[in-house]
Amino acid sequence: IYNLLFEFSSASDIASAHLTRLTNLLNTSSKGHYDRDTAIRFREAARISIGSHMPAKSLELKHTIRLIRELDFEISEIESEIKFIMNEINSPILSIPGINYRMGAMIIAEIGDFNRFDSPDKILAFAGLSPSTYQSGQLESSHSHMEKRGSRYLRYALFNATKFVCHWDPTFAAYLEKKRSEGKHYNIAVSHAAKKLVRVIYQLQKSGQSYIKAA
Image (cartoon, rainbow, N blue to C red):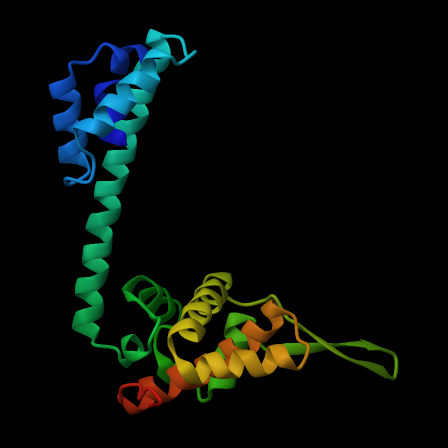
């Protein structure tokens, strides 16, 4: 769509476009998905469009598309470097179904040296995922809440990684479903699964072993 809008930045441009040129652009940009019939429909729709041609807006659109393309290139470059570094590290965290290079890199980068933590509970506290309780005088509430302290980036990475792990791994999927069946809100159930994930990650990193998916 960016190629189309960059080449023809207004309805009037599309309406007056040569059919062969429009067809070739759509066919090439869509890798063969759009053909001549699609180009005809595009051009006919543009001809009955109520949109007006505004040169300033067309220029702004082209400039925005250039910025998007530049950012896409930079993102691709960064993600390639992340993949290279993660392959060099060879962390067993990537063996967990649902954890990709980007999310795995965030978790590894935020935790750093696992030897700093003598238990997974310390990582949970560092991420702000350990529960705390409301206290008032001698009364202590039975309703716990997340501390919301620690590394919010690690908390974000773990919470989102857990959603994917619960989708792709049957053990975590069953655990999430169990928590949901207990009447827990989805986000609360995910936070419980995130704690389980941290314990798994800790064990894998300390042992150097890969995750074994349940049959």
